[in-house]
Image (cartoon, rainbow, N blue to C red; front, side, top):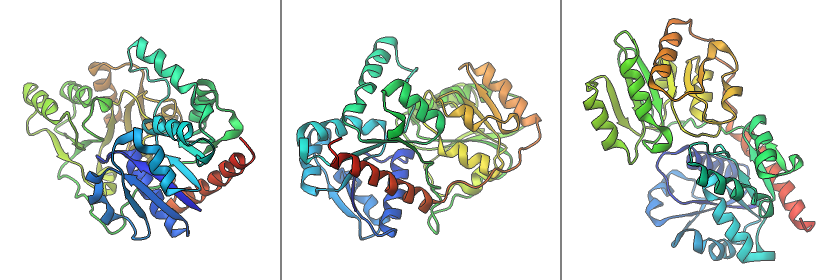
Length: 352
């Protein structure tokens, strides 16, 4: 099977990291993989197996259809919500020559973070996805049910597949900070709302613990200024993006996630697997499933620093949870995707 996917940009985000991990594993399973990527991401090519066909892609979404047409894959994997507009263009412009399209739901479909006009427009857009998507991958049952409700995708066209584990295996491994600490992992972008996490940390009684937020992004300067304004220099740290966070997660006193919207965050799954409790905002329908046990941490429905600070104090005072079962093996996820691709190809060949 020849699989094509598209990576528009790479900043250490989960969507692109998962897509690259799956591409490696599909090659290991004996399939052909083509990755369409911006020329500026050429540096990532060295991290991929030589069998992967790395296709420099100019011009963004408007030129996606001819690029996919030239690659002529058996399946197009749309790795996240951000990429569905390109998928729609591929289906519209290529028509009968379009490959079957499988979309992985990567983030909350409701987008409650939008102002109501944008939220309404987003809802209407999501309701169109059934017209150009052959099959959908949801990372949890709650996300699958949400896709039926919000996107009108029939349940028989949805498969539930957890993300693969993103351990680097022999690559860079982050060294845990010395001393006791709270941990945040994610891009320094408005979606993650690290400002809320920092303000909550400033109010919480953490008994000398520091806060480390690993990630990179456009909000570094703003967050640095906030840290200085709150007098937290030397207590809140922004080390940047680092691979291999397993030991850092395992030794954290808790994981803090204050995102405005998410899908099924890998970092929460990995924290629970390591026995690290979580304090998180209700950023997606999957969060209640992940934090269903009281011992696993606290899930907040309000976005106020005082509420987050109280949750931090409560979790730090509680016994540490037992580690859960390990995250899904990468090849198990890759094999499940191949089964999904086969179903999409069969449906596409039957005239949809």
